[in-house]
Image (cartoon, rainbow, N blue to C red; front, side):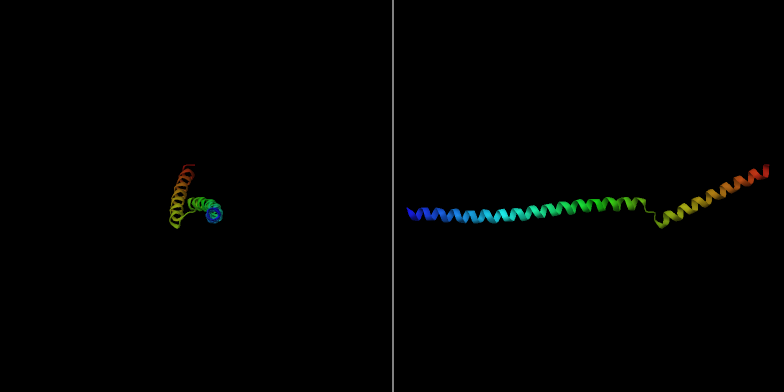
Length: 88
């Protein structure tokens, strides 16, 4: 009978060791999950910042097209002014 109790105690100790190891692993996984959530939040913020910067940034082609349009508008305004001056 004593051996059966000893055997049960040994089985409980083995199960307790397994449970302890799983608890330690679970704590590690929870720490990793927390770190990944923080990193994910940071990456989302960086993505939004980059997306905003990309929206606001003008490419060289956009700048050139804007200059051409402004030059055209200025010539049209100069033509209108010269027509007004001639009529006076």
